[in-house]
Length: 108
Image (cartoon, rainbow, N blue to C red):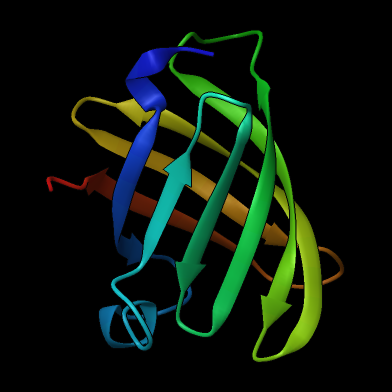
């Protein structure tokens, strides 16, 4: 996995939800770890990811996820890629919504 994408990114924009929803419980984030796993949370949605390297770009990946949406089980897939200084991607809910997102690297 490309180290450029590893770490935690703050979700700053989503196609389907506004910033108030994104940050409803915690500051919305998506994180990628060296062991090809990750996690995200925005609004009342929380997911744990299994990551897969994309074959077409070094700074991109695909993932499957499972977790919950307002306490209901949820799962799906998605992708993410570094575009300039931002991370752009999509989170897809199985048999449901698909939302693009933009994120910036979280500075601790």
